[in-house]
Image (cartoon, rainbow, N blue to C red; front, side, top):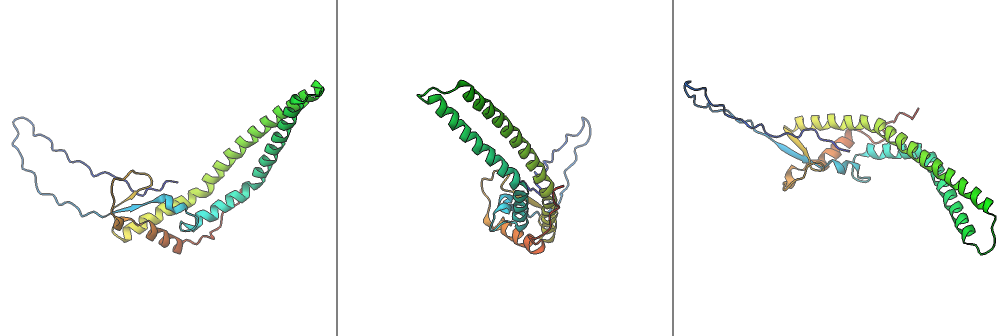
Length: 197
């Protein structure tokens, strides 16, 4: 999850050349605004113990909703493994084995593999969509909270160190822990989640 409130480069002021024959103008002194930059590591939001509490609540809810599908897929995988072993043992047996029974098992195995793949893909797509649905409001809340947090502290730019490679950043500008604590105090982890339809 990437959360970046503001990542901007300072605009480069280009001087335009005066047109030919026009009198040269001397640049006026322009006041440069005082800027305050902070650094945040958004990947710390996901930490189960020290991150944003609502993430853990949402992850638990999401996993609970998809547990039946996970169990079904695990059961199918076990059936595929068992049947694969049976086919391999039958083919390797020194005794004469009915080719029709081996073929029947192989056909069943192929059908199980296709069913497993289809159900797995469907479950993954449903999981991704549901994850997006339940996490988007939290992401929006975090974005708004970061903006408020920055304005209250006169921070002009917040850079997400989890998304942008940094050569060096002083520890003093890292607001990750302070923001997480502030967000958690104002947004309890027990916030409700809309159940899946």
